[in-house]
Length: 268
Image (cartoon, rainbow, N blue to C red; front, top):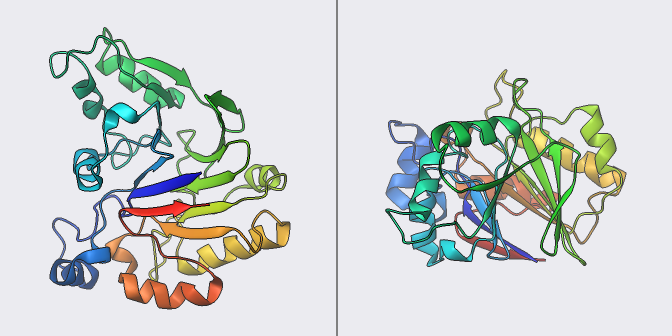
């Protein structure tokens, strides 16, 4: 299995469009891995996770073809993860297709918003619920409940094939007890986890900072969910977190964590 991190930035990206923060200024001057588009990923070139406003640029940058997608799996409805207008370009009059080549998996709120926006369009949608696994081709996909928005079933994703297990978590917050209990039954080959607040924690509890990332990781290690061979990658970094790519690397290296960057391909 592999996962490509198409984007690893927070809601306003890095550099943020209207910001003169130190991290934004550094990214403009140095480019490279300090440029972060809005967070999204693709598993094995076929399972697209989230469809945000930077989708076209990410796919063009990586020379990928959206016709290879067999599914779009949405995690939640925040605008940096869910840009419903992007769906219409798969169909007439933008293309000659009468049906799209992928299934949309999403929570109730997103399904309702897609139906309201495109009531006559032939999208195949399947509603997802936290802790309720479903299969798609060779994959078993289990959404787990994130601590992000009390008004929505925001989900992180456990994705498994016959050999490997991935946990992809953006907008996680510190999980509530039911999620921690659920994770006790899993052993991960790869963990991709948010670090939105970086070195600048805020009172908002729907994201985690760098120290909380380490706390979550150590708890997963004590549970046995994360083990010595688990690849651990960060994502969803905000410029407001106050860390450049190199600074984040310096912090996370002693903890056995790799700092994610746009375009990163992880095989496991």
